[in-house]
Length: 412
Image (cartoon, rainbow, N blue to C red; front, side, top):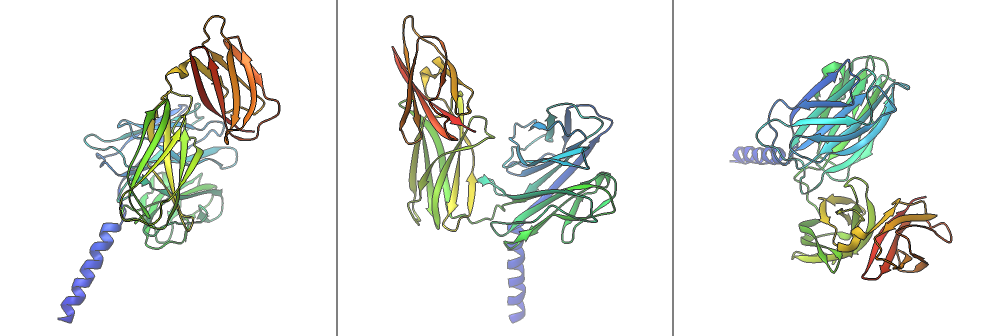
């Protein structure tokens, strides 16, 4: 009887391990040489599964250019993990990208990367797909990258936030053959380079390691949350809607434990983010809690928003990005530039009625009025009475028939 209990426990724990494990699905590689192109494309051998993760390594031989976009034929959104990293003296460069909660289905995914200029002679890409990765949140946790020329190759170490993470590693050599690190599984040895990964069950300090037979190299690492991660917040929804020419963000949690606060971030392009506010947690709860935050949005037609949730112990995760159409109908009558500005001046164009005057008031993020100007010209340039510090500011425009406020950034 005890023997059968032991066997049953082994089967149970084996089943749990299979459930929480992140699984490598497929990897493919393409070395475009000779190449003086700014574009490289590569398809997976098989169709991908929706909800999975794709990691993309790219390297090329011209350090004056960098990756402009990574896209695919399913419309998935790719983000840069690290880079541009220059290596092998003044010769080569590399970047690492990813897309999560992908749209898959019939037909293989083809990934396309575009540089800001042409390469000199080669362009190389490795693409890898993984299942069992968190999809309701941004699963990227830690990343590291390092160039070198020693026999012992390492990306540098980072400490993971949660248990049961996937450690992805890539290492590219300029000449000598590379081999995988201890404890890693090799997914590609194409072109004498290595794509490797491993699952780790405990939180700790990890690095992607390899061995080099000689020559210069670059090593990259990224860690990703498992789909089995138990988060302190179970987010039910995150939406944005217009109300009185303002964007109202609403989110609902199903449960909260050890949650400290939410940070709201905004972007004009979905890549470069700015913090626009925080909302404190309502405390530990096993019932639905509702939150709200109001903002004016960006000056573009579409604004992007995301939530960052921070625990009481300082750990944090990002939830999925949403996009909201600009709510201010008259905003098309005012354009300001540059945004961000250097804090010394602000220029723009106003759609004024004949013989009308526009009042322009500048406020800081606390609502304090800093300056007031007026313009009778469609195009304007105002010089601030002193250089504004880096931060978020507001310009209020009022004239016959309308009034509107535009948020702008100062970076100096």
